[in-house]
Length: 322
Image 1 (cartoon, rainbow, N blue to C red):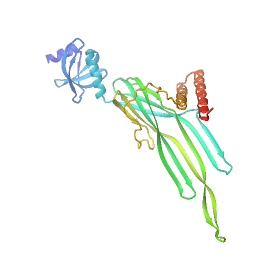
Image 2: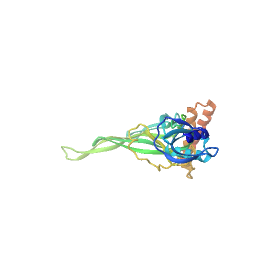
Image 3: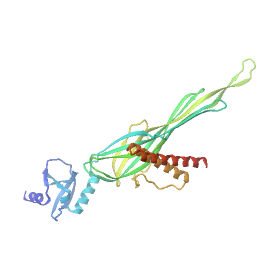
Image 4: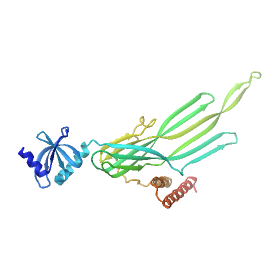
């Protein structure tokens, strides 16, 4: 008992009634050089929870030596039951919608529509401690549905995924706080068209064959299906989540699950002029979307819209070879 009172006096610890699982033993040193042998069992509210002589104690982090403070923080990273809350919403980009219809000289119908959407991802921290240097990896799942309505052969339908992947850096996610991330803008296309087919028939009187022509209908439609998120702190996976979707639970992770060190919103610029301009267009789109979301002043929104429209014209000129 004398030893426990001395420990409590020098380290400023107090007995707690919480029950913890067995942890990791260590010789802890106070900020004034005194030592105790205890078992690290939890880290909560910026305090190290330890067990010694069958009793549980809480040591404020600032009462420990600098080496022990660093060790406790590393222990917390490796042993904390991380609790992250995830939610998302889909936002349509207001200036990236296109629709075209045409009919050729043979009365063939064809239509093309496109729209651009992006995910706003919200991540909340209920882990009991601040999380630093996070890498948020994401895999956006686009569901492409191909349909065929054939005069001969009936109807067919096939769904396949495509992926848009990326990463964002979060320097600090404080306990009980949350962060909002705007993910990549995804262009979604719908294409419907007809192809001419025919059936050979035989004239009952002459016996000659002749062709009866018809139109078969085809379609490709893309829709956002969901998003798969992995959150790393260093090389530790601290959170993983999938939104609701039709095929997002069935797909495989498209990239390496190890964290990718990138700055938020920045990637290495590609050398190909078209790819480089496409990346500039995506970044300008994200900037404009963020300005609308954050309700910036009208003049700032107008500037970002003008920049986006200018880059869009440059991108279209590159495609057309101008």
